[in-house]
Structure formats: structure tokens, C-alpha cells
Length: 156
Image (cartoon, rainbow, N blue to C red):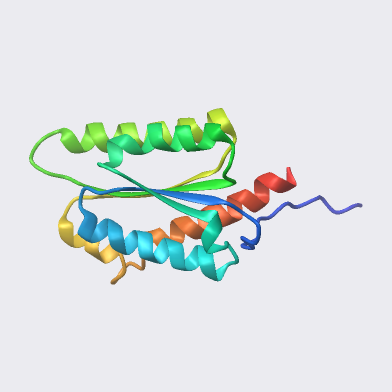
């Protein structure tokens, strides 16, 4: 019996161009996500000259920005970073849901991997925990995701 073929992604970012799209809203949290994301990408071989950071007002603006970047064809992957914290209004559901759906659509429509590094939390404390304290840093996790997906898609 022959072995099945297994395709797995690696984390080598050498020669890859990556865009980070980050919402400015809740910047005190998002800045920590951006810093960790950049650190992981640089440590895995993405050259600083091949790394572009695009700041947008908030998470609702992430999908259209990611789509513009992806359709220009000059990046291998995109990391979307932001924070949506639940409040006393239904704003959370609209922003978080549309952001997630929009970013997924960008990846599907363009074939460019888009890593979802958007925190969707109940409280500010939960967001802080996911931006570098108890729960690790989701910006770093998103960077690893885009590295792995760029590798997987290149093999397919």
C-alpha cells in the first residue's frame, strides 16, 4: 500500500510580501497585536522592506482595505488586526460579524490568504489578556497563520 500525500505549511517567510491591516479603534490593544505580528513575521524571514502596515479607522474598514491590497497582486498574504469589544448596544454583532464575513470573502475571492487577528471580546480585560498577557498574543498567532497558509497554498 502506498502512503497518502500530506501537504503541510511551513513558517519560512523569506521572499514573501505581507501586509498588516490594523484598525486604529482600541489602539492601545491593537498596537500590541501589531508589534507581536511584526516580530513573528520578521523572525521567520519576512524582510522589513516586504512588510507593509496599513492603518484604518476600525474593524469595519478592514475587509475593503484587505480586498484592495489583495487585488493589486503585490502581496503573498494579509494579516487583519483589530479589536471589537462588546458594549451595551448591538454594534458589536454588526461590526464583528461583517468584519469576519468580509475578510473571509476577500480570501475566497482573491486566493490571497487573510489571517483573522481580530479580537472579539466581552470585556476590555479579555482583550488585554489576548494582546500579550495571560492568553498569549493573537497578533503573533495571526502572523503564524498567514505564514503557514502562504506555504500551504504555494504547494497546492
